[in-house]
Image (cartoon, rainbow, N blue to C red):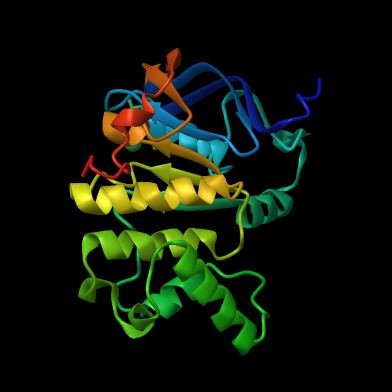
Length: 244
Ligand code: ADP
Ligand code: MG
């Protein structure tokens, strides 16, 4: 069975179990999801409902216990681990709640860490890093700073730049505004909206309805099951002028 043509990613009846000792937890219980090219999707649900597991499966970081994952119509269970890593590195960028920047490295080095292939000439590397930082709403002056010299909102913009540096087709973001104040959250969502208008596909987990309302579609998840799809009310998006 192949997947539908216009979906950049597709999950078919995906189940995921974690085993700790004798205890098995079913984090995902039959997820069906099609992500269209250029989609901006949010995922909402209580803590422990399987949101991070779902992102990890979509991000090819974790394999489902049961069910299929398709990327551009390709069943990823049929590819080698090397090929899987290659697809992940080129196609997918990750953004996390805790930024996950390396404290002892400069902003430049943090973004450079994700840059592939490794043999890009120095001048071209700098160009790619600068372009990513600019797309993420960051500033050139930050390049020589350490992450701790920046505010939380600025650090998240660096983390977004790191996610963008290889020009991925898909951004996966796990509660990217969870540690940010309103103003910084608004900046992050403005950046995501701009990227999405440029064709970037974005899938974002959030607890904040004003953040979810900036997306095109809200999936509700509970106990590892998609329980509903909600249409966002764009008037209540945190990135709108006047809503901050
Ligand atoms: P959410 O992101 O919605 O808070 P998670 O996907 O992190 O939910 O977790 C879903 C369920 O799976 C929870 O019951 C959690 O305890 C369990 N779980 C997640 N990751 C692991 C793991 N690595 N090992 C064992 N259990 C896990
Ligand atoms: Mg989570």
